[in-house]
Image 1 (tube, rainbow, N blue to C red):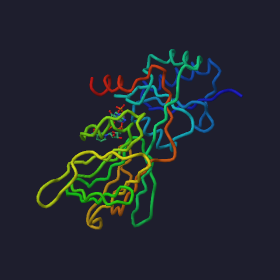
Image 2 (cartoon, protein in one colour):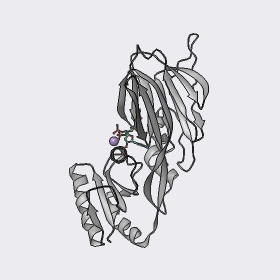
Image 3 (tube, rainbow, N blue to C red):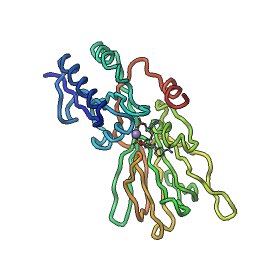
Image 4 (tube, rainbow, N blue to C red):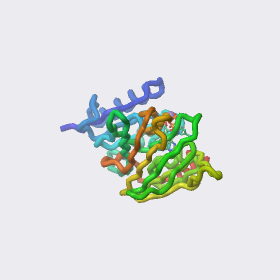
Length: 266
Ligand code: NAP
Ligand code: MN
């Protein structure tokens, strides 16, 4: 039985050109292209980080390992540059690569209509629409930790630590570390309101519950990896580590901190 690959791609001219190149080079080494992400040996993700986030959302963290080819802007997750396809094919043939597993988040969002679940690899954000101060009660496991007042809170994985979290002053975490980070967004501290101002780090088996206060009067927005999935009267959001992991192909010279230097610090 021949080995199979699937391609998930952006649709700009550059990505389309890379799609054709990948199909030609993979079929030349005996792989067969597949229309579905199921039962394949590899999934190519052609685009930037945004494309990887869409892939994971669409296929709900697929079984097969993902090879990212960056045709996007930043491409923090992506392993291969556009001129690195031949080198990849060579390393694939030699088996000279490994698969890095990334934890994701599962958010159960409770509204009047019931509960919906969303998977994220970067982060889940619970915030207001922006014009009003949000008040959120935060529970870690079963302990009421704090009432938070501000724009909202972000809960991220180590993989998501270099994205929105970093812009909010959160810490950068190597994804080999198992933890979740809760990051405050514009916390208010005055005589009327007290909010935590630093990030909170919890072990991966922890459940984090966010309950908007006065949710009948204020729109609560829930964002999964940069996309609004709920906007309305949210009663509570429970975030924990998801059951599935994202599997990403890495070369043996993959180095997270080199990537941070090259792509974030510059
Ligand atoms: P976008 O608006 O096109 O991009 C946000 C930027 O974040 C892009 O440059 C993207 O890379 C990069 N990025 C995504 N995941 C990353 C990661 N894990 N580490 C480092 N950089 C990362 O939207 P998008 O491409 O769909 O990405 C959605 C993400 O944007 C969200 O998950 C959130 O983390 C982030 N975001 C950041 C801010 C902020 O920094 N103030 C605000 C909203 C959302 P590419 O260029 O390769 O796509
Ligand atoms: Mn993007």
